[in-house]
Length: 243
Image (cartoon, rainbow, N blue to C red):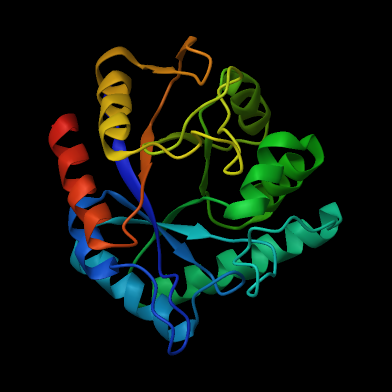
């Protein structure tokens, strides 16, 4: 299985810095860039886009619920119309800034609670599909590779949309192929377990769930994190495993 590497970037805001974007960008294939609703600001967006262009990295919009204080990790009871509007607003902002630098936006990956709601609530998923179908540029949707990935692809294909499926290097899975909640023990893998999971995904196309079940997943891209120097070093090791 050939997998790309993607990472959430551009999450600094004003005088507050998060992540080692300049180091991470050298080792990934896809950059999910925050659009200002959970993190990021116009200058950070502009700088992150320039960094992606310099490193020849594919760019995706990383929209969220309007939740700067909660870093987009709190679910909001938005209507379908509101979700369509907030996705359009954020994607259009990043798309316009990308165009100004001669960069073409490739895909959209919702962030945090919006991502989780998309995977668990049919009405949220439908709203996001509608938002992308209405957008004047064809953009792929990145979502979690689960046991029922075919269902999501079928819904997307009806609207002419492409799905990029992703797995997570450092997260434990439940028996449905979904991420174990961060509040549960064992949800975050240590480095040794993370590298073992990446190797299993790469060589066998499977993950071992929290209960020990071996689950087959179809994965296009692997989500990695570069919040600190140890994370960047882990990305280098992951990339070596995939090469």
